Image 1 (cartoon, rainbow, N blue to C red):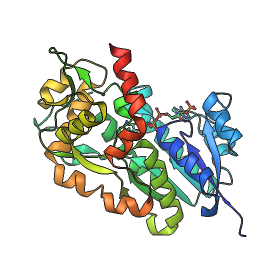
Image 2: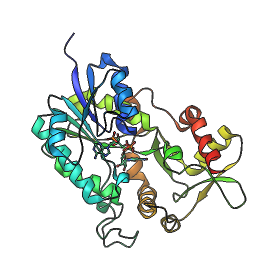
Image 3: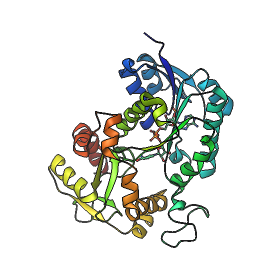
Length: 319
Ligand code: NAP
């Protein structure tokens, strides 16, 4: 048997990288072995990966030399940044640049860069379609990732467009919440448009499909999603699964931006981008194509069936 190719996975203790880490470990026949990268090899999640057969290596996205060491000898690298840890575009840009430079220095043959659109290509800063945020951005956590694509120009890279994770209903505070009348609701400024969404775990499984495809995907932009689904359709699935009414509150983006939680303005602009450029946004994230990368791809009802207890836990926690 030929030698296993090493894949270094940033964010291996998180949602996107964790899905890829578990997929690599579950499919040795794909020919890859895992180097899980974390700031803290002693964490419970890092130790679980080590116990499952991963090499665990410490590195920090803010420390270029640590990334060069972590990428040394790797055939592939999965690169992701976590904007929501610091809410700083400048920091995310620097971390992405460190990733690209480290991959180049280590001679990595295939990088997957988990990116998103620079929405300023669709909504110029001077447009009043949506407010400009932080003086230079329309959707800061999208624009920074899209801007950072340029850093990967001299690295063999697949530009990997992800979608809204349904896991946000459990881990990001976006799950059903009681309205003034006590009826549960989910709230999005999407009107009746459908939004490409995905189970976070499936992002990593799709990434494994990209590493398997190898040169077929280098230099390409590849978008993934598990289902294109409207707010009303998700509310109906919640109603069925929870056995109590969940309604869809379709608010205007300006209302969503005013909700006041950290990042509400960024997310309000993000959902508006998905609504206003719906044909483009959906076209870039084909479910059929995603299934060719990951035959186990889940729909919303499948994800909900597997995560019902987690969703119910958020309801209990609130009441
Ligand atoms: P996550 O589950 O919150 O986990 C973050 C991961 O990043 C952890 O594994 C953490 O590792 C690692 N990490 C963070 N800072 C690091 C640093 N300085 N050095 C080394 N590792 C670091 O993250 P995720 O959800 O997979 O990815 C977050 C990104 O996904 C965000 O930028 C967001 O914009 C994007 N995104 C989110 C969605 C969504 O619907 N939520 C959709 C599309 C894209 P350790 O803590 O172990 O070091």
